[in-house]
Length: 481
Ligand code: SF4
Ligand code: SF4
Image (tube, rainbow, N blue to C red):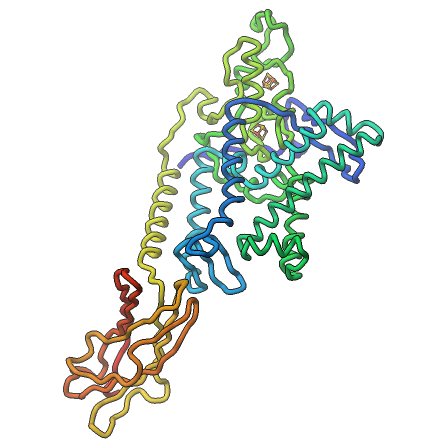
């Protein structure tokens, strides 16, 4: 098994950090926020453009998906009120809880696998907290200016211009929060009606409450809390040291190449000055959304966003040094070894994940759009009728899990060559409903070999030109005790 690596916390009193983290500070930003604020500096580079594109894809998917229509209905709707999750042609019912559990387990394992392989890339590139935070930072930068201008603005006394900028920024944040909150709730109630009802004040109090609740949460998380969510609240950050090992790719600074750090002229030869490649410009700290200094080693606050890599590569280019002083690398590689891509832990996680996906797919594919429950008559196991036949009585409960009204046909298999069916042989059930019919089977006892006879109730669904779907449910016929 691979050895795990330690993840440092900058807040640790025993931290051996050679460099103090000094995010720009304000005593208060005028709105009661007395914590040390991080003024994130914008940076351009490969990883930032990948992150922005992935963020854009995630955000557009989130905004567009609830508006898609399928057969005249909202294609994706998690209708909690009616206990049905509709995803295009498939509707999931409370009976499908197993599938939902599968999805969560698969997602958890996929996260563990990816984290073991390439660290917290989920956090840096696709986590909603990061995507929303960067969008909020974008609004901030467009309205209040660059990092330096924002710091200066916050230190200034309140003026009309400052008030205007602050109001504009918060209005954009709140407007965007409201819009995304409405979209989010639109996954649970019909989105077209939701927007109209909300803005005409005719949405119910419960729906309005949740829209406002998520608006406040989004505004608070992405506008005010930001890195606090990643560094103090999110449990995933705390678990990462259990998943990381010496071969996990993560953002790291190469101290062997960078130290001793220090400023120097572009023309100077660092070797003659006794310096490494780090010019101690602090840019990697200024661009960090969680305000850490990656030169202090792997820290649990790092979300692997790669902003410090882009910043440092820019500096290296200007200095004429080789890129990669900060890079996605592994601890083994940094200590001069070769990264082991194929290791027991990764292999075991991959196998488990493949098995889980196979089980999920099989369960999903073998799922019928209806279900049959058989309840035997509890008062009388069997009885003999006037013709000398043995009768058993059942209640058949048919659940229609499709989105349309369907007529089902019922029959038997493997009971006896001859039998009497007393009751309806077809049943019509509305979408999402359960209907019951009582059925009595009468069989000549000489045709039954055993006291207890296993057989199947057969239910067939035929709709339009589609191939009939048939389900066999096992039951038992008693001719004696
Ligand atoms: S950006 Fe690079 S050169 Fe500048 S302080 Fe960070 S590691 Fe050193
Ligand atoms: S240290 Fe680098 S990769 Fe980690 S969060 Fe900060 S900027 Fe992103």
